[in-house]
Image (cartoon, rainbow, N blue to C red; front, side, top):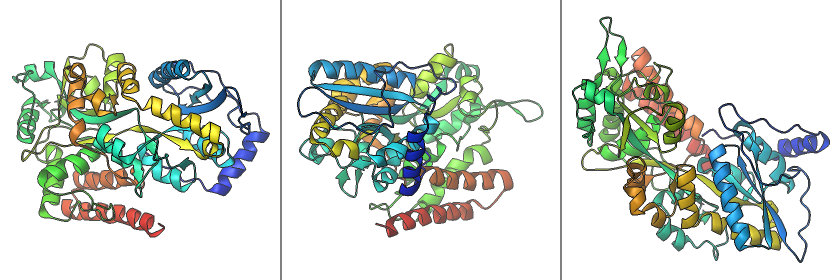
Length: 454
């Protein structure tokens, strides 16, 4: 996810502008159903001092996404029933593209949300900007997080301090089109379980016309989609190369022959096996939704897209293929943090902590998966036999114990470095090893700059 640093000066200037001008309500993003939130509030108005007695109001912010808003509205209703002395104002009218700017315009001035949702890859920037405060250890002990949450949630610790916790998490799995497999003479009940089987079945499933144009793609590698994650956290580990040093100060993609071998494996599908081109058929994920690709790597959040846009697609989902006996997958999540606005008032902070504990409970995770389709972050909920047996969600849930969440200084630049390296090889015939070296150099410079200031 992209990350934008907003300087404190710019933030304060923006706040002044916002307070002086009556901004119109932001429009819902295209393709998303209008979402009903709780009672609205003047988001940029200075926070009223919490009364010493009686019910207290806190604000929760997230960007506008209908399923998330619906799930959170239900959680807030349940929370308020258990905590009648706390009223939660749910602000979810902000489009995704404006969300970080709105946070930058409000939190530095001590207004806006008390509890806020953010992508885990934004944490470092938001902490450096002073938006978030550490979660109190007595309410959120590190040992509890280690024992009860998916291992990927360790990414919520920054410099050893816990700043956020999620309700739900995501993993990657392999989607497969049953009809296309059957047409290619493959058994749709036996999708690829190993990397060798993926290569073999992807080749068999690929169909070209007499001019060499793709009619059906076996397995297009989409670097603009999830393939860059597949390389970092799956292929590298399966080939025997750790992607980063333990302290995340060094990029290790090219630190051994195994790293280069993983890179060549990624490239192999398009350059040697010729199983697809992810830019065709309206690109990722439409090539799969349109029934033009046999295999596709994606997250559980894609299930909702398929349900709404390709309800007749006959597909299945299986864990990512293993190699060398190693299973791995990439994990990510939207998470919740407490802002300095809440921390400035003891009563507001106490209410924010209670609310955060509630929306990160196993019960909240179970409700979330039914409405949003993302997996519970709490292992007890994620290990629910009913969830593991689900023909679609089960593959994602099975990956939770071995999922890895990458530490990103700047996810967009990190991703772009790999996209540029991949494109240079497949489009211009550049040397694969040199392009990987250049990508490593680019991302290493990001890490060096980040750690130099800490």
